[in-house]
Length: 112
Image 1 (cartoon, rainbow, N blue to C red):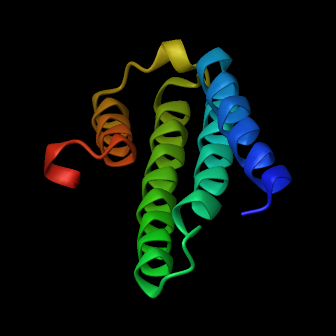
Image 2: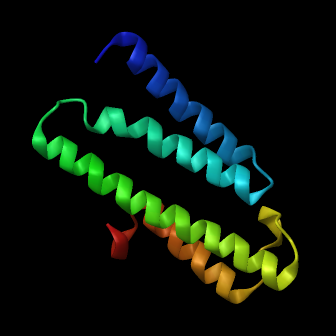
């Protein structure tokens, strides 16, 4: 991989992580997670082997499904409570959906 492209991918990973950690709004948290997903894809498919491309495709599809679930969780919380803040997640269905989405994104045991 080109050194400049590698530098951009790694700096995008740090930018996405920083945005996610420092966000108070669900859309900014989602934006940071998506930046991380899009930054890691070139690093996964770097060897240009069919298995690497397949792994990158599977990673993208799973992360896109988890991101959709995260957005659905925040929308459900806003519908029931009227709050879009990350700290105001009080509805049980929204908590369950968010826990599932974060578990998928982290690759925890039932979702690995």
